Image 1 (cartoon, helix red, strand yellow):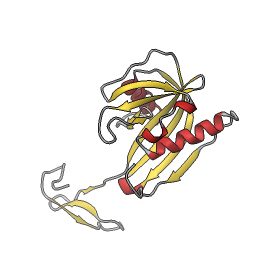
Image 2 (tube, helix red, strand yellow):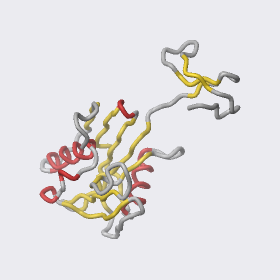
Image 3 (tube, one colour):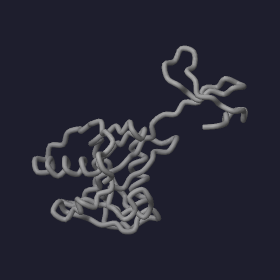
Length: 181
């Protein structure tokens, strides 16, 4: 950040009074500009024993498979974000079945929330951020072509718990990957 969005003056990185972290502070009006983690919201859309996945048409991880999801917008709830992202990326209508996983990725300032969801019908199609959309059984999941670790972990937990019908909330803090995946 170089300029204050309130007055246009330059900002400097310093620790404000009564704070413990360096923040961007305006050199003229003293407004503190906080930068906070982004929320990435996704859904696991289920149809019978299959999961709906999207092949990414955007970076990062172009061409790899993921759950429908993306950044939460201002003015919407986490559930609304999951429903909107599924509609945008997969053209699919879902009913949420509850929060399923939460992963903190502090090294990229993100928190990923994954909801279990029921696919309401088979009327789906790739949106502008997807090359294709497809239903996969557990045996058909392209495990080596999954775009993100929170997606992989959520799907591994989901298929293990689907066998018992008992779903629990999963959470974790992910460190930077040893090698890019």
